[in-house]
Image (cartoon, rainbow, N blue to C red; front, top):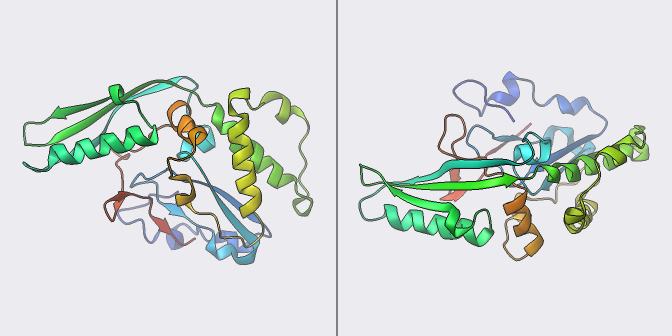
Length: 235
């Protein structure tokens, strides 16, 4: 993640973000649901056959354990404009968020603005940060593989246990990682985690994932082709 200067497209060269070319083995766990404009992804393409990039569900700090446990949200997630289209746009986004179970219907409020716009206000209480233990264990397992020659004592497993409520999610995500891991592997995609068919995944969104993109300085969403999407730059 880099947001250097006015243009982010040249950050790889300016900040030497392709230094992974010198590494023997590179693993990048990437947030499939992150789409903030100032949180573009720098991939590890320069690592070539020594790199593996795996997308996991959640936003940047869900995976990196950057949120306090039980922290809630109260934020504007959309501003729609247009005399005849604003309300329709906001309602469509509200329905999409409810269908994906990012929020419940009663947690989303449409607010008219003075300039014929509509704000979509979202509020959610007590989001757990325990999901971050799943990526932590995945990274530890990958680091423990013989070729890396890295060892951990048993304190990680004792101190950072996976809660029973997340055991199914852990099993499913681990199976996905096993399918897409390996040096030079580039088969994992963010879109693999964007469906609404899996109930356990929808439950993760509501109880454990934060909606990081909001109408606040530095946190605005990025849209590509009218969809919330993350920009990727070569690294």
